[in-house]
Image 1: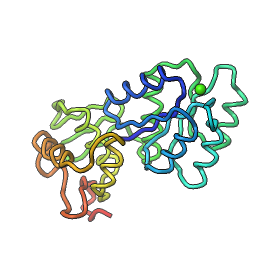
Image 2: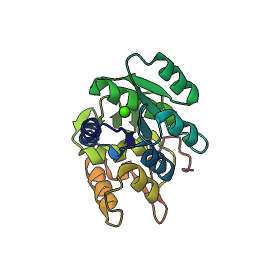
Image 3: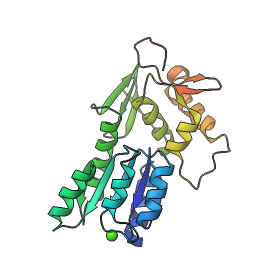
Image 4: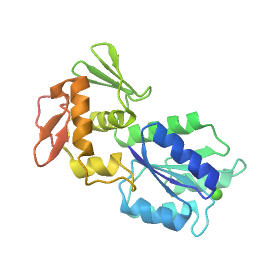
Length: 224
Ligand code: CA
């Protein structure tokens, strides 16, 4: 999953980016509203963490403009006494909010919930044959045994599992799993797919050569 964080406090921005990266997200940062809007419109993020008070363009203005073209889930960060701000944020199209100062665990939980909702995935456990992907605990088990995946391997499995039955192109995967500083010219994706097959079974991920990858949803229908 790829997340954008728009936050003007440098220390908070840096710590959010680091914590999200450690949790396996691809993540980009923006220090003001203008840069935030540019990135939010340029890339197909799975979620955006958006501070309310920002230089150049505030969070509500950014959100108003973004909603003309994109439905990206937005988690708004607001001040403790900002009841009116929170109402305005929700009315403008924010999907959720969090009051500063907040706990990182809660931010992560709310982000996961937002991403699940936008993928229309109400369950936190996705079963594919003998593999169970637990998107709340962020673990994967095969035949009842936990399987150790790297953060990036997990992110790839989670993305395909949440969109199982759909053909996902390589460019979509690069857009959702790698941030703007990572090269998309390498064969990184193939390396991850081959490692996942080694751990979860060769037929866990199907390659449609020249198009992309998919995980069988178990319905026996061809991916769309
Ligand atoms: Ca701020």
